[in-house]
Image 1 (cartoon, rainbow, N blue to C red):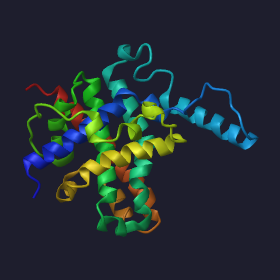
Image 2: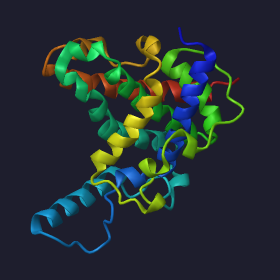
Image 3: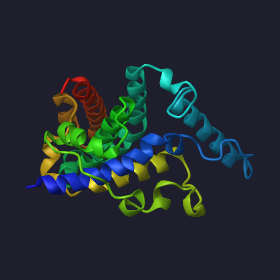
Image 4: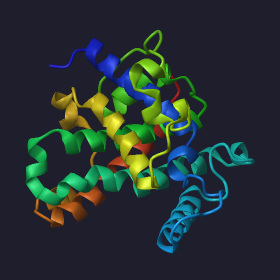
Length: 249
């Protein structure tokens, strides 16, 4: 049984790293060095240009941190996050489903799915003006696991929660990892690592429709079912977060 203290610690660490991701989506959704001259082989140059194009598509002209973002209606800002998380994080979370029901035997797939949904919770909270990661902890507990928690007094600094170089390639002059998918995988994997210790609660996490959950148990076809299941979970988590934040207290 996961007690409140254990859950608070895990979700507090999750919120600290999630804050790093939602504050700077360009760091993991845009292609690195997109404005630098492309050198090397023709094939490498083409791959870099494609990476830059994908990054621009994912970010769009208006995104967090870009001029005019604060003038975009809150609901549209939240939907921006839902679309990006379902496009980038959901395929990573659903990948273990290629093995079908075997994915249920280890908590990896559930932890990745909960991490993707939790990232949506944090992004929605931030767009509604709740900027302190400490204040995201009760919302994460309610939406992800149906638990009621009080916000912790403070969270450990980012450097204590995870190695800084693994989160921000500009720190310590570490070369950035190649590709949007790799950087997104690193971020989601780290978030899932904080939830890995909570397997008793995974049955409570947001999910998609029953049909997709059933399909996800089939070998190979399970990947398609997993994608639809986790996409529904992210949307449900974002919607429930918004409803809770707009409900008078």
